[in-house]
Length: 258
Image (cartoon, rainbow, N blue to C red):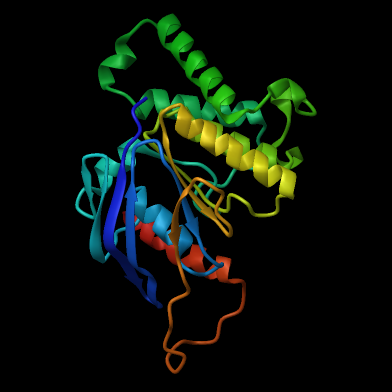
């Protein structure tokens, strides 16, 4: 696996409510851990989706590997994967861990490779799929035997850190060069937060650049700080809900258009 460099200059995205983020500069080498640090509602999720080709920046430019943003969104999507992003890659609480893995493996086998791969013997394809899944689980540090019901454990019964590991494993099945993770340190204890960052650092060491949204960046990360953008209170209608809810609401339609 070959990690991708990530660079940006003056990157910004203006949406219906004004600027989600603006003036973002990044210079990260392949295999970096890039921490998008900022308060809730400061455009962190939108920036994550823009850097992984799921949202179209409206100002400035960026490069992921050899692909330019915002011009080559589809190419960036092909080399990037998303771990947990609320409202975009949610796990289904009714499905088991095994069902999630099986579904993702089937999708990857059907759409993630060249069509000629479908012509190979079924046993060969099955073995490759099993290897991909096992490799992804190992990289994500998800021990199936430690789960309450092993592979038959429902997502609703997973602890927060276990769900994080599963989401990351699902993304890694596609062997991305860049992995995006939202809300990395949300609802984690200090010990769990340290585990999560150690996990992401190990993924970078294995050849994947990681872009992670957080409230506080770990030591050694390439830190990109976001801040809340001013809105026109005279024209902005009153809304209820958290800043995270608003940011995700803005991100969903834009991600669909990308």
